[in-house]
Length: 245
Image 1 (cartoon, rainbow, N blue to C red):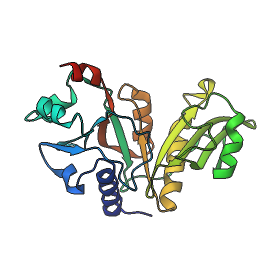
Image 2: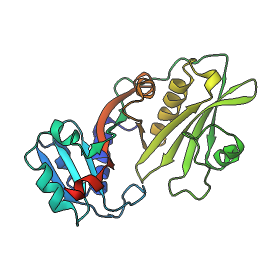
Image 3: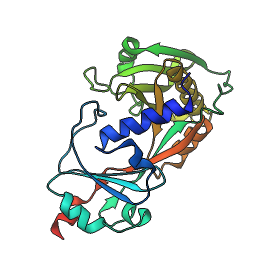
């Protein structure tokens, strides 16, 4: 299994590719401005312009912006604190990201009322006929970030919960989970995320988990499944308001 040193080196290196900075920048204090570029090896998320993203791992903030708006962004944010930057009027939706706590994570105890199965990429696509799993399933066989492996929970031969891992880049797989409403409250989300996280680690990849800042239940699932907060990221902005100023 991957150790903590290797995991963090991979994460710093990947985020540096994504936000066009140095891996060391995430450990520095202050505000660091970088130009948005589609660097080779970046996580394959939609490229939307004009672009303004912010990321902090608890020290300073890396601010990544399109070339045409970078001077204006610099003018607005230079000299401000991390707290001030992440709470500007044109910024909203700061999302937490989680990494597994490799020192403590173990396989969770399972609710024996349910059956648990791990399935591979080709079999995941066979689940697309199922409805109400929009967080866990892409419903797109041509996705740039294919689901590589999934853990499913069944109740009397009916699939009631799915956690899946999508290959966002060469080293990091993102974990998503969904449980049908009537079966929530049985810790299925925690069990599935925990099971899949250990499976991904055993395959030599780094699992990570993200949710909305307002989704406390999802954040609780991450912690109970063996994760710790690792960074905060903002990509939602009111750029039209900034550009008018």
